[in-house]
Every structure is written in C-alpha cells, then in structure tokens.
Image (tube, rainbow, N blue to C red; front, side, top):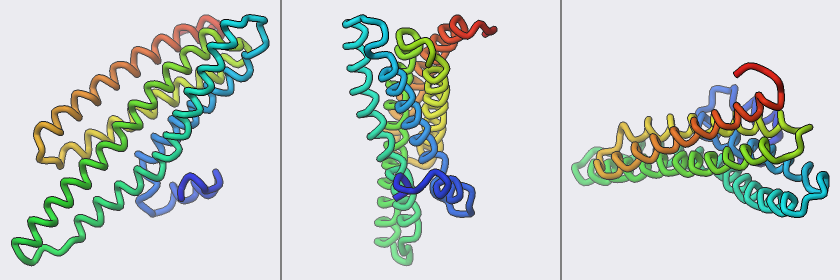
Length: 211
C-alpha cells in the first residue's frame, strides 16, 4: 500500500514513470499532513494557558483532526485504486456489441468512482482547513506558522482534488451526476478560498508581514 511506504520510498515512486501515485493521491496526502499539523498545534496548546474552555476546544479539534487524517490517509490508496479500475475497464474486450456495452458501462462506473474519491478528499480537506483556522486563531502562538502551513496545504489539497473531480467528469455521460459534481466542486473551491484568506489574515497579524 502507498500509505505504508517510507517518505523516501513514496517520493521515489511519485517521481518514477509509474502512473500512481498521481495528483489525486498527493492531494489526499496533503490533506492528511494538514490535519496532522492542526492536531499538533492543538496538542501544543492544551494546558498552556490555564483555560479549561480552550483545552476542551483543542481536545475536540484533536479528535476531529485525527479522524480526518485517517480518512485522508486511506484515500491516498483509494485514489490509486480508482485509477486502476478505470484502466482495467478500458482494457476490457470490445469485439462484439455485448462486449462493447459491458465495457462502456464498466468505464462509466469506474469514472464515477474516480470522481467520488477526490470529491471526498476535497470535502475532508475543507474541514481540515477549518480546523487549521481554529489552530491559528486560538492555538499556541509559538506554533502559528505550523497551523498556517497546515491551512496552505489543506487549500492545495482541495484545489488538487477539485481538478481531479473535473477531469473525470469530462468523460462521464450521466448528466445529473456531472452537474452535481461540478456544483459540489465549485462550492468546495469557494469555501476553501474563503477559509484560506481568513487564515492568511490572522497569520499575518501574528507574523508581522504583508498580505
């Protein structure tokens, strides 16, 4: 499994001539890394400010971030598996009309799954971005850059996943599926942009730079 590789091994495989891991798996990995950073900031915050309410909020953030991190880590392999199903469908025989019909159906179903996986990744990455915003605004100020980096790569995860949604939708003939997918992708893209802007503004105040 891709998620079980060492960092070096994963990078070498990514840079190889193999088609996986590709952009979809990398998007999921970015989301998982972002969740880990938000989780880290929360852990560095608990018990630091003698604030019970803040500690409870950070504990909740940790639970949510851990759950999202696990989902996104699994999605690293799910995306590659979805790609493999698409390639498998395209290799199906097409000598007879029956084989052609079976192949076309398999391709369409595989493409739908290839769109569903990055859609889930984008949804989870938006949630991670929201957690990163909390980490930056309320977390340990000494770790504000860690929360900010988490927000930046969570936004990247959303944008990358949305790109993968759209490329797969181009080959799907189910109009209703395509329309819903495009609408969901656009909404997630807008949410991510708004959250990143909010986090950027908060981080700049702490870091003393220009926007």
